[in-house]
Image: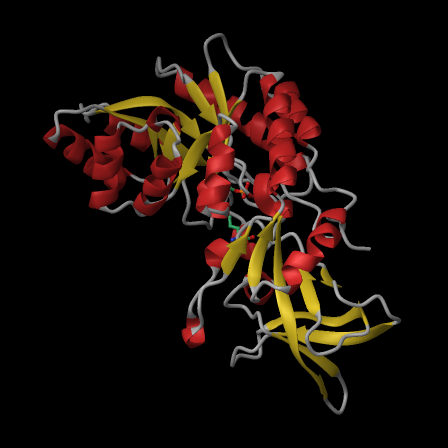
Length: 384
Ligand code: LLP
């Protein structure tokens, strides 16, 4: 089964040079309406994680919905500003912020820097002082929770480079008292990505309650709590589950974490907003019959979509051109690396040269992670 959206655009797809990213903006808008409505129930604030997809058209639609932006580089701050995100809704995270990026954040008067280490505190303090500014900061704390995701995308465990470890928090708070150009406005967490169980989020709330009571003992009130992103999407069933269950997600936070009067609660969803609205469309170059396998060689490779090669990620593959009896294929790209494989033993309607192949659920960490390896051209995007 192929989605109604893909079927209805097929004539246009046939005449567009491949490979390209195809975006379903109606689905994106419905997803945004849902996430905002569910967050609004509890007064939660949303900052879209720009890293998931920074296509200017996508950013414009997300910005028009009224949410803020979570950025992890100067380039992302520039992209968010260009798309129209108000600077007071931009947060800036990342373990390695360069001086020019910090200066850009300071000059732009962004809402908050999420800080990950003492040396970073010192540098931001110094740069803010030079400009006679006070930088608003939140401490990114590593809550030491295992979210059971792929090892390349977990962030909340002790072995990880991200955040301030719990046993170092006191030391960081001591240091903060000596830095006059910083104002602590809250804390930040992010425990990983493509989290499909609700349990880790519940654990995060419980862990935060302990952390908060320790911080409050020092007479500090936390005005802002940012729980990061991480909600997963259904890669197996993009048509039956196009919009993630934001209701249960926010209900969980509301149930296990009671915000105090005046406390603002923030989230940074990326994948859950844009994941399902993007499809990579590719054309079949050859059917190569090996001794043991039949290979479908596409004109898209890991240069266009690196997730299968990098994380063993599954993307549903569909033949948009044929609906004949199915056969079993390995679907590969043209790149000179064995890891350039989108799927092994994939059941597809009989494939011929020139057929259009869809790689579904590629809206998040797809186009934005494209590379020019093998001197290839970056993929274009299509908004029908
Ligand atoms: N906030 C912070 C601090 C993050 O590091 C991330 C993602 C997010 C929010 C958004 O997380 P999301 O809601 O999208 O799960 N390239 C990988 C995913 C890397 C995620 C990095 N951080 C992939 O293709 O699966």
